[in-house]
Amino acid sequence: MLPQPSEQRWQLPAPVQIDPQLRSSGLCDPLLAVLQRRGYGDPEAIAALLEPAPAPDPRRHFPDLGKAVQRLRLACKQGERLAICGDYDADGMTSTALLVGVLRHLGAQPQAEIPSRLDDGYGLNTGMVERLASEGIRLLVTVDNGVAAREALLRADALEMDVVVTDHHTLPDELPPLLALLHPACTPEHSPYRGLAGVGLAYVLAMALARNCRSEPGLAMARDLFCIGTIADMAPLQGVNRRWLIDGLPGLKRSGLAGLQALQQVAGLEDAPVDAGAVGFQIAPRINAVGRLGDPQLVVDLLTTADEEEALELARQCEQLNRQRRDLCDAIEAEARALVDADGDQRSPFLLLAQTHWHHGVIGIVAARLVDAFGLPVALLASEGDGRLRASVRAPRGFAVDAALQACSDLLERHGGHPAAGGFTVRAEEITALHERLNALAEAWLQQQGGLRLVEPEALVQLQDITPQFWQQLQRLEPFGSGHPAPLFWCSRCRISQQRLLRGGHLQLTLRQGDSAVRAMAWRWGGDEQQLPKEVDVAFQLRLNRWNGTEQLQLDIAALRASSGDGLVLERCNRRYWVSRDGDALVIRNAAGDELRGLPDPTGSCAVNSDHPQGTHPYVQALLQDAAMAMGLAS
Image (cartoon, rainbow, N blue to C red; front, side, top):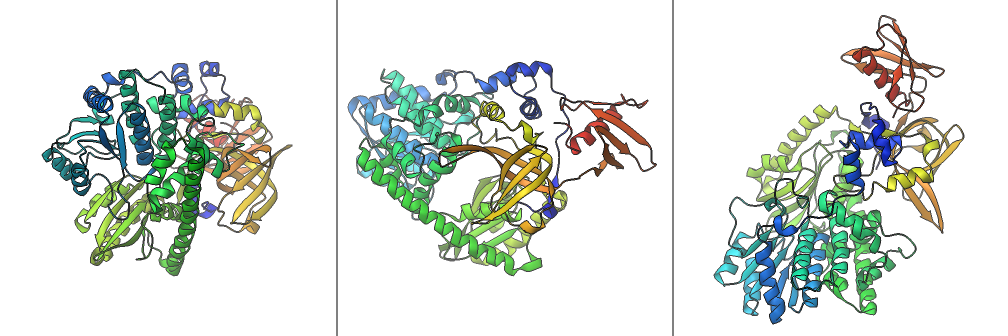
């Protein structure tokens, strides 16, 4: 849900002067402004983003890769049975399917072992190890888990089992016994392999093994699974992740994986490209739904079968579970919103909501929706039995979930996470004290934020510049994702010529600037469409909307506010200035009535020319540039 104007604070980017050398990239100035603000300050850096270097030899970056390959090659040569021990999220399931498929092709007999989210919890456990040992398994390979499974690894060592751990979660201070470890933290400090998710590590292992065995035909399909899992896990799109995605994404449409073709069919992607957005919003949710509500083996079977009919049936089961997931999320969200609304003006700064019947597998999704709706940190709790509750936590940018949970660790039985998300288990009798402490942390954070949600556009774009050519240039910056998000643009002084509230609470607008008109969508609009001003500033991401065989560029609105019109108040260094326009000129007046005039560069750069006696003074130039940016006259 979009923040309403009364809830938001816009922070426009600092003006930048585009280095003329950067235009050799062929990108337009608004995109160059985005890249320059993100730290890509020279042509070489931009060239490396657009065309990343090939991945270096992984043997020089992963110290244990040779040992892992040697043991797995022996398993392939002898047709040995082994277990691939994965996790129930999309990263873990695609990692498992990737290694199962490659190892089968190379002659081993791998079996997938993924614990149940509801019955077993996360990762390798001693019960699983003992059962596999009793079945004659002597080799375990973990994917997307393992480094925290100390007791299970000690038990495997006692049972004389070889264990290869591939994991990207935080390393413990002391490693348990294992044969080999593939982990990004074990690579050199600036290694391009540092950002790999679990599926990336599985891909590294599969590539090294296939090349050692001089048999690489299965690696194309392994790369397809790398793309799915990396995007689904929101791994940073830098280093080899970016290189391999650029190489691999164009091939997903014609993938040789019957399961991926079936997923495209049930997701309605037959006539649409399979890009990072399609993976993240249409394919990955259908895989994740299985791990949340069903048996993860379903996904492994789907992504390893060669039978098209079987693949389509399994994909339909994924689709059914995804619909069930959507219905559960909608029902839980409605209940959670009712609980929040019941508090009225007494709403807590940290929303902690509990219902014993809520489903553990989807409360994280609903918590994220509530963060979008209220701009506050959220914890949703469901019963775990025996007087305990398990929670999923999500938070807006700037509120560190992991630090907050650590500050409450004495009240929690278990906890973990990272700055944006986490989870914990708590006894029922500790919930009141826990909520009080989390409220205090959230209140302090809100005071620092001024109680408002921050809107931070990256570059100004005029509606007349939103053309197919601009879209093609924007696509050169793809894939977008964690560490390299799609740019948030802004446009000023747009007239609303049409508006329409659609089913589902979405608001469709037609925005105009001069002779240019563009369609815009405010998804999950939570305000009163009748109260919209006629002229607005909008912060948006650009999207190509495909519908009934037609394509149209569309603004996906992240925030909007009433336009400043012909004047605004600018505060700088504890001083207040009144900014207005006089034709093409920018006029700035201070509290004493002194006037400063400037003429923005017609190219849209941040340069502002002034004939004032102090017009070249750094403070005056910075003031002119800030005023031009605020009035929508500079990018």
